[in-house]
Length: 343
Image (cartoon, rainbow, N blue to C red; front, side, top):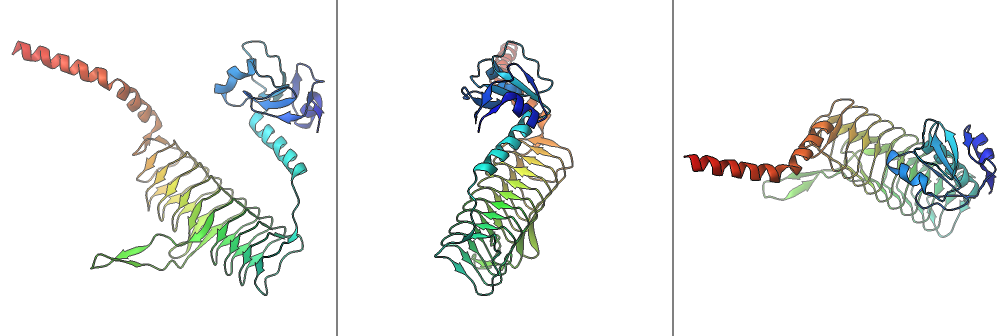
């Protein structure tokens, strides 16, 4: 599809600065985009690319002030990143393949009602007592265990496994290879040094509008439920242990690990490879830098880094001092030599 900068600006309620008649027919990153591409500038550290970009048009914020001439046409909007996301979603919806019907071979247990607008791919397994919502999309090789409940407009990509009894809310997306409802890591030590498995009798609940990345694992509760609340977004390769609770609209990057029975509040942002100890409580609106280790409770509105995690400002000071440690060590050695000479 081709569209002029002016037409695009009208669509996104923006204003044009430059040649409004230029034609856009593709998207690209600001450092790689070529002629005909639309790109965006949202992160200040990429600002230098705007002066050399070959893109035809760039989405920028309304308060962006260039320090040098820009050859590309600028389209000023309130939020460039969100605007681009909206445009990409529109483009994706226009090119998406609509899948419906039941492919063979697959297994659907007797008594399971499949909505007319559903899609079930080849080699999928739908067990006894499963309830499927409207417009569900179940891709090939998905396993859905006994008595699982799946809401409307859910997408389960290839190889997803959902164990018995779990509940998936409306408009959830679960990417390839993810396992929901496997046993929590529960073993009781015995006198002879061996371990006895503790039965994991709970379930996993995903509330509405949750998205789970590829190869993530969410363990079922020992008792009760492991709960992923409304609007949570989890990246790839995340481990969520038994009886964990993750609050509304929290986002987590890849390789986060959450130990059992930890409660994480709402609207948190968690960087990659962060580790949470078990049986702790994390407040709302917190930020966790990548590779932070969180051993204890965190209050609301905190920004932490490091392992063990501390206030982000204090961590930055520590890093600054650590860089100076060799010089400080040499200074101490010199001072000791002077003191020894005077004795």
